[in-house]
Length: 41
Image (cartoon, rainbow, N blue to C red):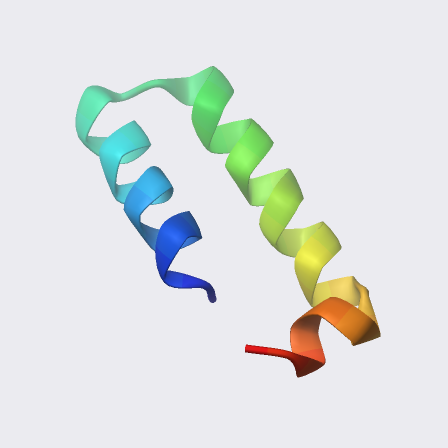
């Protein structure tokens, strides 16, 4: 998981921002499913 995404998720969880958590989770699942993105770290 990219460091920028980890930071965003940590911040969203600390603020208990459910909408932001959902969006970031969708980003992560999209990122994992896209081979060109997940192969470059």
